[in-house]
Image (cartoon, rainbow over all chains, first blue to last red; front, side, top):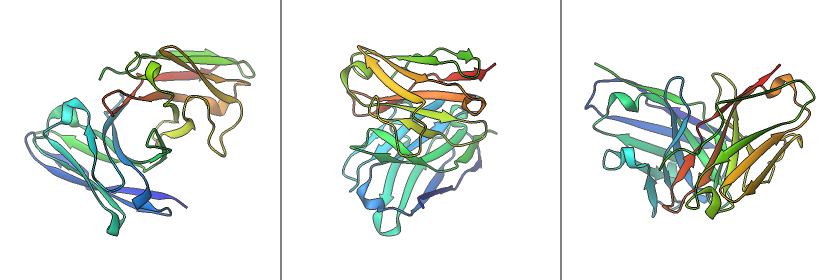
Length: 119
Length: 110
């Protein structure tokens, strides 16, 4: 059974940093593009970033470029999101998702971890 | 990277069919056959319902179908059931090698 378990969320002050982790199991992690998707309270889904199987390609939504860094450790079956210079508008549930096909869709999702940016 | 446009809400009676539209541009929906649809119940993670415009993952009811014409993709739910009441989001690959989600549609079963 495929499992994606996010951790690392919490309350952080504006300008602060947080590192999210996603532990994957039940599939060959190193064979799939992986992504982070977020959802602000009461709002819709927003794609944040993705990373290729070997980490050689990474893409970000404009609003997080230069502040967030996606990475992965295939030996540990883990995905990460380093979030710096956090803003109130980054408050959201952050989902980890594995991509299917050539990375064109998200077939498996974690349950999410809540990040709250507030003073 | 503007969100794809979906109607805020769609409703139907049990047994009816409804269609949700998802409008983008030639740089996303119109440019690639990489449109997917997700169902999300309150407090739950999204679930993949349709991928690559019209393909259904294993385990998803054949009452769900997808299509695309130009810059607009559509999700049709036939034989509407109470359990279909949820939020639905489309998503597309873009020319910037990123992805973009739709604004979301709340489906209500009357």
